[in-house]
Amino acid sequence: MGERGTSGDRPTAGHWRLTTVLDALLAVALAPACASCDEPLVHPTDGPVCPACWASITPLTAPLCDSCGDPLPSWRALSVPLGRCPRCRRKPSRVDRARAIGEYNGSLRAIVHALKYDGRRTLARPLAALMRRRAADVLTGSTCAIPVPLHPSRRRERGFNQAADLAQHLGLPVCHALRRIRATASQAALPAAQRHRNVRNAFVVTEAADRLDGQIVVLVDDVYTTGATLDACAAALKAAGVLEVRAVTAARVAASRR
Image (cartoon, rainbow, N blue to C red):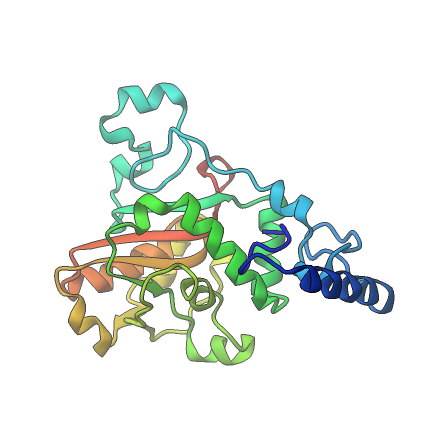
């Protein structure tokens, strides 16, 4: 992530020289800016985000809710069975465990926006690398990654599904086991209380779900806000026989900020 030479084999001296020349030419001819901080990119060939912005993304630190992955006050982890947050104890989600890279703010928020709304699809690979690192416990033992689908009309409008792009790079087989059958209102525009109602029964399983009976799967999406979309997806999968539904997202909104 922003470190030169991290995407493949150790670069040769000739590769370094060529990259340096390309960086200089691009910097002068195009003057590209970082998609996060808007500062000029010194090494444009490394991608649209500068190393400083990648480095500024801080992980969600323990203790975390064992179910949804929301940060917990340290005392709560000792006093609550399994370290679950009040919301998960009050109304358990159909998602068994969820994890994210970090909180949905700062550089991480800007990078997710660049991927999702600006079409910077090359960002999916480094974001997924961080997801693999910081959600390794959720990914381990899972059969496949299932991207949260867009409605066909939204997919045509955007041109791609950011969740599918992220899922491609998580190191698990990708299974398109869900289909969105209702063009719901954008979750971002709704208050938390209406989000579950907005996506209820919006997803159905596809034929690909037939081979997931009794399996452990991982849902993939860009942002976890209230968990309503992931919960609706998990409901459809469990009704089809999936044993356990986990989730990984690039970012999450902490409960205190919803």
